[in-house]
Length: 590
Image (cartoon, rainbow, N blue to C red; front, top):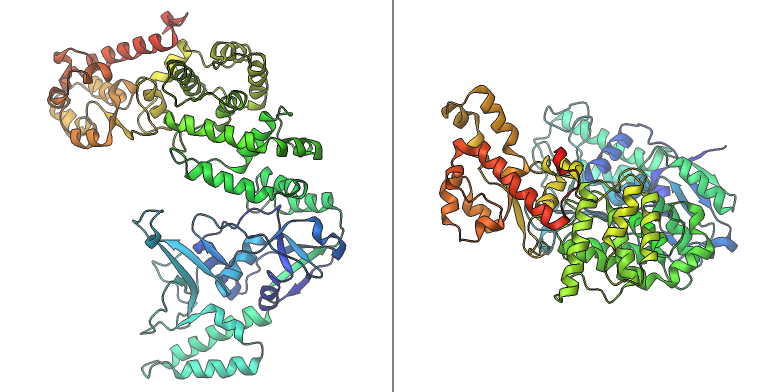
């Protein structure tokens, strides 16, 4: 295997003119510190690993969707633009090295847009476009004690031209690309050197010259880019090389690989852009913020198209891809309706622990497009409650942990058997999942898992939310609140109460459990703050206690009766769960 090498300046010129990215590549994900670290390594003469290219014959050029390298990156991810390669000869696709090459392009010719601290993501003024600068007066041999570990040269992304003063003389790094001859470079270096203040010492001038010379040679003279070019035109071979080359790099999802196949086989539609755009939509523009990825969408496509559930390349063959494409509009609508519904139940990126738990609901909605899980009719409300309870218990009971493909298969078969029924078949689904060793039933094991949910965990909100059947969690933002405030459990307060050591630790062990937690609106939570519960509860209306399952026994509202309060409230919680799910057969074991 023969490797070749080239300098950075020559390679940069080829990006987006001869070198492009295959659809198989994921997006650019490096942040500012990683880009700076790369430039620092290059300045210090460190190797930056090899690159892998794939050169296509001209007759194969039109067979693949290709994308441009990102030149203007952005916090939170940057979408690559589809490239036109008409007239491009010796088209070369980068199979390994996208993150490094993009970082070089951004630092030398482009920008990095960052979000300012303390401003909202949707505020246009929160975003500033920055370029990379190098301080030519910073001696790389001197490491600042409070500087970033391992960084010798002082690079900085900034949105304004930095002021040159004292021990700072800033050069926009991209200017070095102007000097394709040594004569022009030395002319420039002399001109810049003459701009140094009269107060500059000989040592500073020496550092200035060395740094500028080092930058020039790192970009124009050193063969930093060592690459191997694959010329075989077989796609499967290129795919295999790509997978192996990326095993040790930035982790790729299977969807990153499969999207290139879909893109080439979905006639008339750019599947990559379509799926990327849809992921953006469901994550950003529904009732709540979500965190789904392309893998979830493509897995859903298999299940909803009644194809083999296993997420393998062989299941995305031409025939299956054609079927998915024919159902794509329906699939999209069902996915959006399903996610929007569970968002309405309060399930979002902060508490969804198993995305596959939503796929049965989405499958059900695909086959019952007239069902409205946010509707107001008695049928809609009842059906919505059934779906909400099932999703919540499936998450709490970890029904989709481990091997979820089998679970999706058996639930899909059950939904097919009951497709003529308008209602979501909760009992039938629970029956088959129980036989498979998983259950979303309310039983003694579920009660134990339920009661041990603690403050701040992902599932605790869901555990609490099913106790409030009338709330629309997607609209009303609620916080987990300690009924007896956390401040009451401080060491100082507990010692002042003169509790025994045993009681002291019992209080602490119960503080964050569900028996001492409730859901309050943000306004109520702020108003309550650290007030003693026995005082604050008297300010609530008559329905507050029943709504939040507060024992109607004023003598238990005092802090010294916290243990008794906790036991009484757990009993009220379990009574409400029984009304929702029915009396568990083995409840007596608890």
